[in-house]
Length: 155
Image (tube, rainbow, N blue to C red; front, side):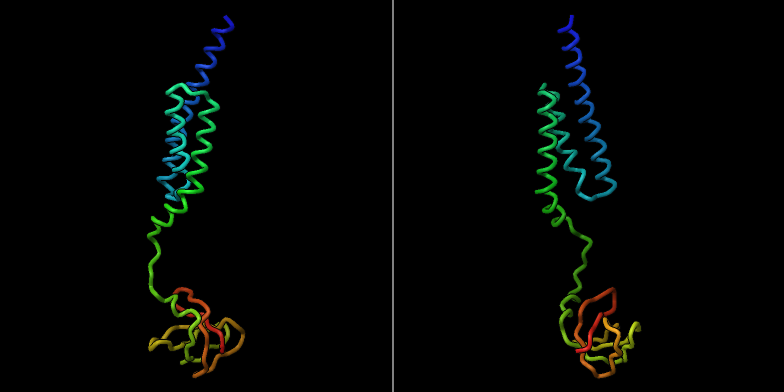
């Protein structure tokens, strides 16, 4: 009678974990579909493998170990590659090529106020990175680009 109860409990634990893997598959897939962060999909894949192992009758500890290993390995190895491959929201403008170049001030740039600089035949709105006024015809170095304005410093 005790052996029957142990077999019943073992069967219930296996059935519980098969259900648990199925729930993890659904929840992780739903989270991934709503966030598109390429994080929870790897847990979903790990749960699929563990779900299959559960259906094949593998021990619960094997299922858990496989789930943890597959999820972590995929998260740490495949996620960075996938994020790089699927990166589509970056628009290349070649404006970053201006950083480090020298421009000429065409409209005075008081501290905290926009002025204007000319570089490569184009006029750009610019602000000073320091607390000094940049006068017309002074040379400036472009430190960064924020939106549609250049951050400059007097050379």
